[in-house]
Structures are given as C-alpha cells and as structure tokens.
Length: 496
Ligand SMILES: Cc1cc2nc3c(=O)[nH]c(=O)nc-3n(C[C@H](O)[C@H](O)[C@H](O)COP(=O)(O)OP(=O)(O)OC[C@H]3O[C@@H](n4cnc5c(N)ncnc54)[C@H](O)[C@@H]3O)c2cc1C
Image 1: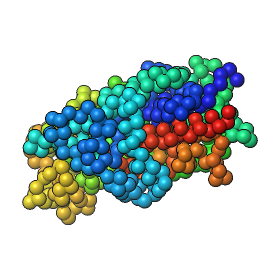
Image 2 (image 1 turned 135 degrees about the vertical axis):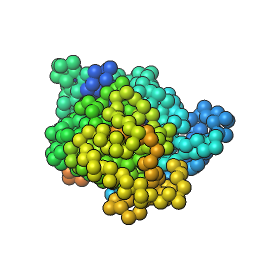
Image 3 (image 1 turned 45 degrees about the horizontal axis):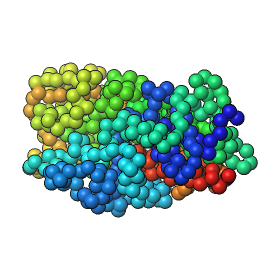
C-alpha cells in the first residue's frame, strides 16, 4: 500500500467534510478522496442554497448558529420557533411514517448542536430572509421551519468546510476516485483509488463513505426508480453515480430505504443534462403555489397549493415526469409577479408573456391550446374569492368543484400580462442507500456492523421516503457525518 491513514473519507461534500473534521477532532489522521477535479468538486452540496433545517426554540438558539445576528435584525424579524417535535412531525408526515425512528430522532435532536459545531469550525450562517420570510408591515416573518442558511450558499459552505479541513491538517486528494473497499474477515482495511488515472491502494483503519446517491447514473435511475427516469435532468453534480453504495454492497452491506424513491423538483425544461455550477439551483421553479400547472393536454394535474412549498416541491418533480412529454407549464398573472422567486428572473428560462389568455395558451409550446383555455376559465370560476389571499399561512383560499382542486393560495388568472414557464423533472438525489445504525456504522446484510465501515449523507437509506422537508439534506449529512467521523476515529484508534 502506498499510503496509510487512520480514516479515509470518500467524497468531498458536506457530509464528507463534517466527517473529516469530526474524525480529526477525535485525533485521527484523515484523508479525503474527491472523485471530481478541484474546480468542480464539492458534490451536490456546492449546488445548494445552503439552507439547513434546524430545530430551535427562539432567537437565543439561533444565536448559537448565527452569533452575529444584530439587534436590528432581531427587532425586524419574527423567527418564531421550530421545535424538535415540529421537525419530527414534519419528517414523519412527509415520509408517511416510514422514516427510521432512531435515525430521524438523532437528525432532529442533533440538528442545532451540529450546525453550531460547524459554525465553531468556521462555517458562517445567516437567516434566510430572502427565501424563507415574507415582509409583513416592515417585519420579516419566517415560515416553513427553514430559517438558517450558509453564508455564500452551497459554494460558501463547501469553501468554508474545505478551508477548515485544510487548517486542521486534513489531506484532500482531488481527481481521486475510490474504486473498491479493501476488506477481509477483520473488516475494512483500506480503499483502492484511481488518482489522476493511476490505481493505488490506500490503507485505512476505518473508512467513511460520503459519496452521494446514484441520481447521476441513468442506468441505475431506470433500474431502481423505474422506466422514464433516464429522461430526468440531474440538478447537481454528475459525479454521484452510486459508487459508495456499490462498493459497500460489494463488501456485504445491507440496502435500506426507498430505492424507488427520490427527491425531484420542477426544473427548467431546457436545462442541461447535469447541473451547472454557474446557474446553481436557479433552474428550479418553486413558485407554483402562486399559480397553476398545465400539461401537454392543457390540463391541471396536481394541487399546487396542497401545502407550503417546502413540503411539496420535492415530490412534484416525479408528477411532472409522469405527464405526457415529461413537461409542464407554470402559469401566473401580474398580481403575483412580485412574489415570484429570484430564479424566475434568470436569463436561462423558457418563458412566454401575453396580454390575453387566448394569446398565452397559443404560445405554450406542445400544449393543446383550446383545452388549456377552457381549463384556465374553469379554474378562475372555481376560486373562492371571498377568502383573502395570504401567502404567509395556509390561507384556505381554494377552488371548489374541480377534478383537482387547489387547496390554498388560489388566485384567479385575470390580470395581464400573463407569464408561463416551461419545466421538466430535475432529480436532486436518490432516497435508497445503505443501512446504518445510530453510530453511523454500515450494517451488513447479516445484521451486524461491518467493522471499520461508516456512512453519511445522501447514500444512507431509510431516512427520507416519498418526500422530504426542504433543507434536511445538508442537516442530515452534517449530523451523520459528524457522528460517522467520531465513530470512525474511535474505531481507528482502538485498532491501534
Ligand atoms: C440544486 C440543488 C439544491 C439543493 N438545495 C439544498 C438546500 O438548500 N438545502 C439542503 O439541505 N439540501 C439541498 N440539496 C440537497 C443536498 O445537496 C444534498 O442532500 C447534500 O448536499 C448531500 O450531501 P452529501 O455530502 O451526502 O453529498 P455530496 O455533497 O453530493 O457529496 C458527494 C461527494 O462524493 C464524491 N464522490 C462520488 N463518487 C466518488 C468516488 N467514487 N470517490 C470519491 N469521491 C466520490 C462527489 O464528487 C462529491 O464530492 C440541494 C441539491 C441540489 C442538487
């Protein structure tokens, strides 16, 4: 073996760096392996807005994570509370009570403390005034349990984690793809790595897998998520092709979780096959609660106002993929234009504008215009206009009598100019993965921990099913990354 470390971490995203920092803090000599070249490194974590879901009981808890919250900011904001019970309820509700109870409880109970720990390591956070709060009478009211974001979004998060790792003496190899785990009857002994095109073996007393899901692998998508999934666009990195999962399964690991499920959203119809770091997450189109969807047949096909966006966006990508031609249009009128998120104002959008509904439907590419016009008129007639519109709460302003009603925020489409945006399905990450225990040890298919093998982040199965509460992915990677790093260091040090 050409190199020897206590702990090798596979991946260089949020979960990996949290694991590396935690293992180092516990006294281990640590190597991070990143498959991507440095300029496109950082995994999906780098594509994010850096939003992290944490349980907090008020401003004092938030100040543990955002120590530089000013008195003015506090006075001008209504942060509310997001209790551990609420976070657990949200997880249980959106996963239809499938989430592993022990892992879910750890995720929730360690969320605040872990993000505060990241802050102590040098990752800066702020409050998500831009995306998660509405200005009501000059005061920002937060909604949806998602209050904390990394300064600089995903790129800032990865940069700060990388700086922290290097400062703490952690080695990082870029363009170094883990190919296989070296293992024998005593457990994991190291990793076979292709570094700059050369295959070498690195000895390790423990390995943490944090190499992401399989969403960037069209063959696995089709195999596990089902036919048609090869047609989805990948929102993030092209390097998460299931390597970590495959290596662990080859070493006897157990599969867990929702292998046919994934996080997938409305995404610009003409976006490239994989994410683009310049555009980041801005191909997403998340303002559908203020408008309606139309498919190729000119029909609405889901309840745009079923819940706050944070609790529906991750499952609606799948519904769009199921539509004829795998696309849909989001339609808005001028009344809600100022409420559309910043991602609607980038230049890489497929957008049409019109002064009449007749003109609008004629401009919607690949849509049955006559049916679309009737659909919009029927929708307008069904809106309960007597209920006031309030974006800050589930306002109950609904439609009645339609085949698919809209439950909240139902505004009539009657004020020109009208705008429509074409979207398809963008896959974020796969839900199925490896089974771990509460020490983040990877479990074998015989039900025992595999000695020396740990995992964290996207490639862990069992936590997210069917759907996902926004901002839980980074928190999940951080909480279990930190646990995995500490457990791996302990295992390495006790191995001598
Ligand atoms: C556009 C977008 C926006 C998002 N926004 C948010 C958000 O605001 N908040 C939130 O919580 N979540 C968000 N998510 C989800 C979030 O990105 C993931 O849940 C989280 O980043 C996963 O972290 P991870 O460390 O497990 O994986 P990643 O960050 O993807 O890291 C995996 C790493 O493994 C590396 N790798 C893969 N194979 C190998 C190999 N064989 N050898 C070595 N390295 C390998 C990859 O190159 C990568 O560095 C978003 C995702 C996308 C795509």
